[in-house]
Image (cartoon, rainbow, N blue to C red):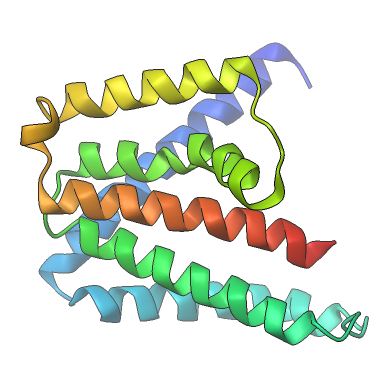
Length: 168
């Protein structure tokens, strides 16, 4: 793949991501947060259903369903908190703060699995905190929606670690 094509695809993915965040806030004009989450999950489930039906492999291990329940519960909590955060935060703040899950995931892996973070991750985590504070005019400027977005990001980080465990 050429560098130009890769950059254009990355730009396209970023645009879709941004449009999705705006849509999540806009849908709250017409639906309550839980209905919006239910609709998102229903659409996602229907899109994934053909791939699930093609998979004929049986689940492995005796802990498969308890692990699956943890993964599903964490995802449900994460997505619900994410939708709720749009009630009290701007799209910009909510989008950035939920995206901090990418920095929180290695930290969650460190606490849960013992995988030590790298020095670059420590710097990224520090810069993320600075960015969050700049977005909200300091700690006093954090709204309830901002705090809900951070909680959603933490749940997404835990979900990613548990999903990794589940898939092994």
